[in-house]
Length: 143
Ligand code: ZN
Figure 1 (cartoon, protein in one colour):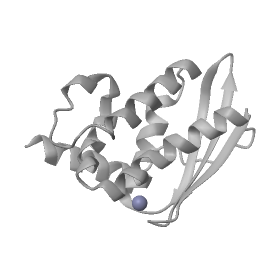
Figure 2 (spheres, helix red, strand yellow):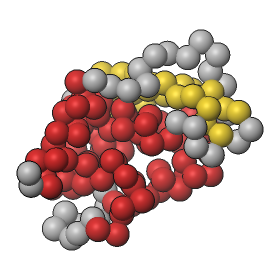
Figure 3 (cartoon, helix red, strand yellow):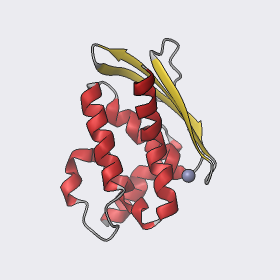
Figure 4 (cartoon, protein in one colour):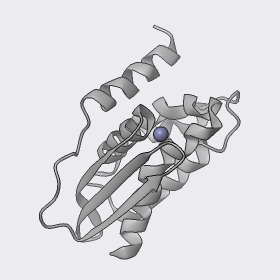
């Protein structure tokens, strides 16, 4: 299977079976974000313990890119220290700024998030992919 097909499967899987969708009843921080260009909406709730994201809920509606990115983000940050989460957010948003024809080989630390690398070919969709991360950062600022 070609790499692009693997990426497509990862995105579809997260869109159809989104992770971390269960709302948190005891959230310590939350934020809501929207991408009016595409109609995407994302709500992030965080349960924070000792400098870590102990639990995360990401709900919302919108295109497959925004919703799969939200699910992938939930998997990537759940249980991780806040400092690491902010670093990952920078790395992911940095990848989205790299020209689409350049290799994503230097971004192995992003794990499954790399599946969204192809979004760079569609500049208007980059906002779809970064919306959950920007909303997550806002939630952490509100905490
Ligand atoms: Zn979108």
